[in-house]
Image 1 (cartoon, helix red, strand yellow):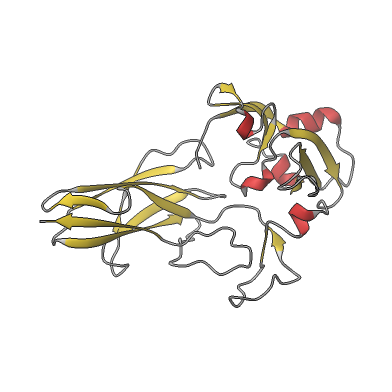
Image 2: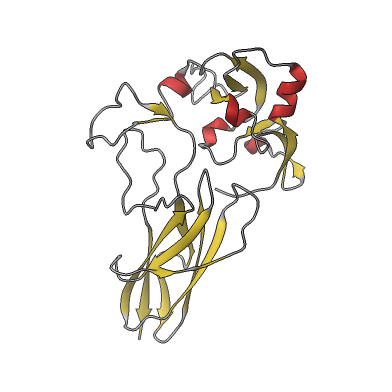
Length: 249
């Protein structure tokens, strides 16, 4: 995953130039990729008009000030920031305005989550909804899992935190399996939808194996859970990230 810089045109400007009729409710992008196998349904996803008209939703042709790499959707792709990646259609071929959500595999069968928590092992309930904005999430990017340190060393913990809607309010670190938490230092806020870096200095008081846990809070008081609610397709997993390290004599 990454947090790149995108260059393109606002989708809302293209839609406005084309002209929107009364009743326009969803905007669907179709990609050139046929799916995992040649006989699979075309990759088509739609987003509500409100998200399509967001000023940060783009038809992008550049990434990090260079033409889109082929793997990232050259020559054009949608960028729907903060939402599930499948909404940001790569290798964009067509844009269609609809009066209702698109009906198709990638809206009705895939990329769906239960509306309410369900019992682990249950099938997808009929009232499940299409995936949209990412829940609050953080990860530890360093140290690497199973890193080794000498006793007396200070361990610098770095990571990233993000949320699909809103802003990151704080990130907390635990080194005692969640019994206590300490605030990490947040890096400067960037553009909306960009991740926030965080740093925490850990000074182990004993030798042996240590586990570093991270959890984030957003500005709506949503917190990253120890374990997320189970869902049949496994989307939006945002449980605490844990990294184990060894402190040696």
